[in-house]
Length: 311
Image (cartoon, rainbow, N blue to C red; front, side, top):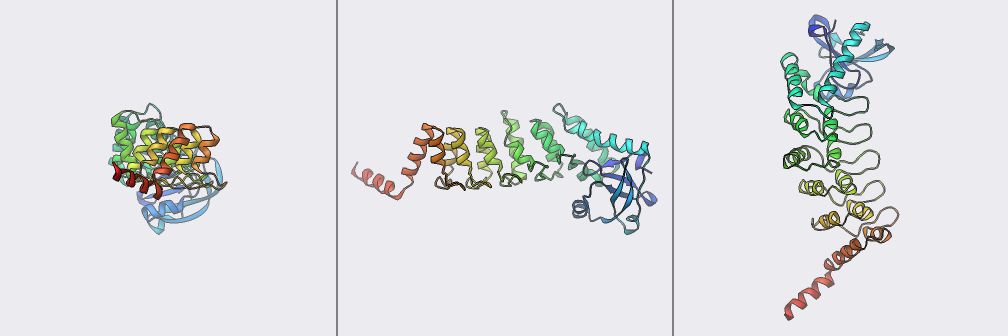
C-alpha cells in the first residue's frame, strides 16, 4: 500500500518514493539507484531486487530503516504509479515555476512537516531528471522569495550540482539581483554555499561566470564572500582573463582592486589577461592592466617613494 491517505511522497530523483512497508513503517524505492545519497543522509539500509516500477521491469534498490524491510520488491498498480507521479509533479509545480509563490510552498512544506517530518529534507532537496532541485529553479527564475524560504528551512544542500555541473551558487552568479532585498537573499545563499566550487564540465567558478556575463554587483558580492580571484579553470583561464576577453573594464578594475588578483597568470595557451585585452582591441583594459602592472612593481614603488620625498 501507499503511505498515509493512499499517497506516496517523492524523496529524491524523478522516481524515488516513500511507500508504507511492514506495519506501516516507511521503506523507499529508488529508480535510478541513489543508495549512497540516502544512506549518508539517513542511515538507511539497502538491498536490490527485480520488480516492476513505472511500467518498467528491472533491478531496483529498496531502502528501509530496519533490515526486515529491505527484502521487499514492490510491483505497483497503474493507479499507484499515477499517484506517485502526480505527487512528484506537484512539488516541482508548486516550488519550481517562475511564478511560484512562497506562501504556497510554505503550505506544502508545512503539510509535509505535520504528516512526515522526517521527509522534509528529502523534499527540499528533491532533484528532477536533469539534476535540478527547487533551489536551482527558483534561483534561475530570480524568484528570491522562494529562494529565501528554501534556505530558511535549514535543510537545503546548496552545493548539489545538476547534470550540467552547476550549483545554485553558480546559477545565482548569473542572475540580475537588482533590488536590495534580492541581494540580501543572494548573499545568504553565497554564505551557505561553496563560492569556489568548480563546474564539472569546464571547471569554472561562480566568480568566472558572473564576470563573463558582466554581473558587476554579483562580482562584488562574491568577492565579499571570499571568492578566490586567482582560480583557473580547465583551460587555465582566470576571472581577470574572462573580464579582459569580454571587454568588462569596470569588472577588471574591481578584480584588480581586490588586492589578491595576480594579473601575471597565463592559461594553457600561454595567454595572459593583458594579451587577451590586446587581442580583443580593448584599449581601456590594456591601459588599466599596464598601469596596474607598473604600480605593483618594486621599481615603481621606489620611484614613487623617491619622487614623494622631493616634493
